[in-house]
Image 1 (cartoon, rainbow, N blue to C red):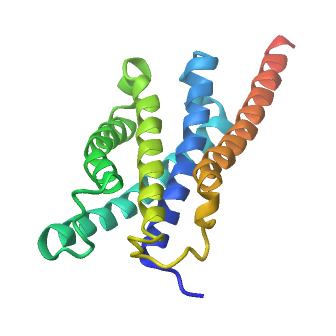
Image 2 (image 1 turned 30 degrees about the vertical axis):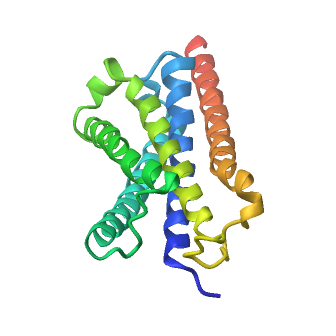
Length: 202
């Protein structure tokens, strides 16, 4: 069974959204529910999940960015893939990707080189990053799916993703799976905090 390049890139974005959701859930739990962003360092369950899934999201975003830049260059230079300036899905995803890139660069830079500022003054960037990922995933998936259908059928029907009639389920799936994984991590983190509190009380 062959996998089309456009479907592969959509799967990469799907996995990136799943990883970003786990990171978003763990970050929200520590920074906004517990109001202790330091838990992302001191609690092993949160620390490991937040950094691991964050790194996965970063790598997957770079893979998607590489494919997207190549596609845009091809569209602008040789019209392959087609430069569809009359298409809302093309314009919304393509030009909206630039502010997404700006948020990603800012958040990633702070995550790796100035985490103290991120936790102290720029916690909102975590939410902005999650929203940017959500925009990227939803617009990319819709752009892919509308090009699997007439009258603008550029790609074959998906082999690994859900069919077009289940587009809504496909869009929601990375949020649901990532949310479930994130909830399990936060539950484990809460158990660790309770155990640590009980140990200190002895």
